[in-house]
Length: 264
Image (cartoon, rainbow, N blue to C red):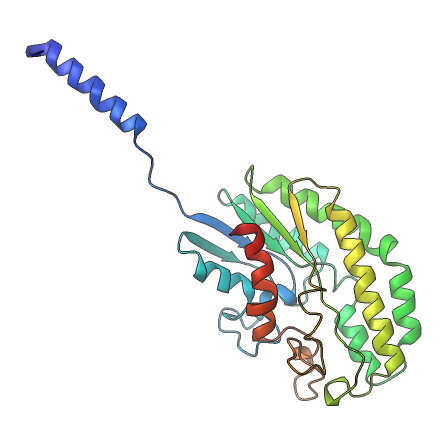
């Protein structure tokens, strides 16, 4: 059939419009916002070129994930020392700037002084403090976690992949220079606190369908301080802030695979 004149122009215009509607749109980059504390910013990796103040590292799992996903743009706002209150006041607004499809976070450890507690074990008996912190976890941390998860879910784009990561056990059964000053009893109690913190976080994440919790306990189980292949720094007397935080391997081999199980 042959089309001419105005009628032909209308037909071709209609066909062209239908083609454009049927053609797949160019894929927009996934926006990834990395929230949280030092376990997400990369403290322990020894290099903080992305932010010396917040100690953000190119060896931290958020940056590694963004480099492995070619279609992902990263807004990296995790910061050393961040508490749940800091996340809500300083980091959460990042989610409002544009639609976000991936969110990751570690949070809660600083609310209970987790790293500082273990560091204190090196200079004094911390058994009672570890027990007290463990027994008060729910009352101290539970409502704060709920506030964070509700806020993050409310600000992320619909259908966003939100991943909450847990904290590993710091110690295994043996001691070494990296656990200097920490007794066998204190190592056991520190691990019990890590287990209880893991259970608390997991329990509160479960209240929010659409948020995924990935425990770090199993991933780091054979890589604690004093293990043959540690993914956690032991005591560093020359730079105490590095102590008891994940190494480069802890991020690349420990945390990163956990996130990729959810995000692909």
